[in-house]
Length: 326
Image 1 (tube, rainbow, N blue to C red):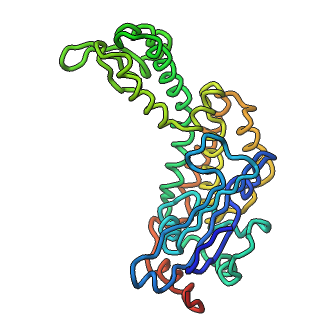
Image 2: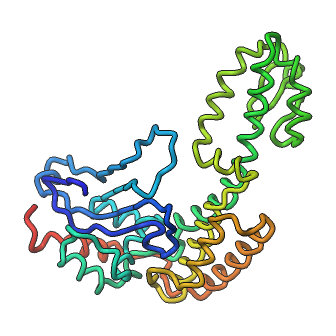
Image 3: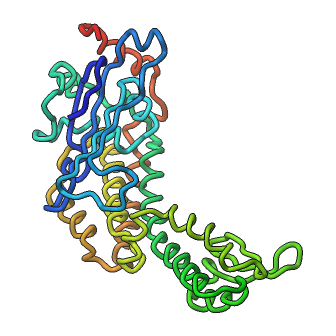
């Protein structure tokens, strides 16, 4: 599936919806793993942090399909660092062994056994910073991206139609977007009127042709997921499902220090329903608020420590080199 030579592959497991139990017939295949860097690469300080492969290139405009496979394999040392940062994908990999069908061919039995007997609380901090950041960003940032992309598209559409200045269509753009936070005309510090699109300023006397390029670059930054959100009326349903899942996993970690995959059947079904757009925006925010409240309550009595002992992580890494001579 992926070649990490001359390093030693320790572990490969399903990730994403196929691990969580929320996959559908259209879900692609996500795989995460860990490798042990060769001692030579450590001595020479050339050890890589990760290897990746994807059957759908990053510059492709098409969405992943069920036939696509996305693989990322981290070095053991880098994976442990990601765990301590609360990286959501690294944390999922830590508990992937709880899903009986998730462990893939090529995994080292000794490492798999070590995972099963490992005490996760020795590697996870109470803050779970990366996970919380992911949960908030998915719900708040991406749910707005469709609206932002629409504002940029409206501006591009009008500017492409004129041969004059930005000022010739500025009022029309503002009226069509109808949201002053996304598009408005205001006076700059030097006293000149300007059009602001997502806080990017365009002098009204500038040519419309000149304004096209920076707006096209702005449009490109929003990527494929924003276009999906735009088509769905500005709501990124997949982002909401990610947020609900991550908040639930944080709750489980605070309450028990562990996650078990796949998720409980009713919760997995909820994630599928959210992804498929079966909930209105108001219902989604209510679900998210309720989940956030449960997670915050669990955090108050968390079983996780404020910090982790660096020696625990170091001992874990060193132990994996014992018996291996990569």
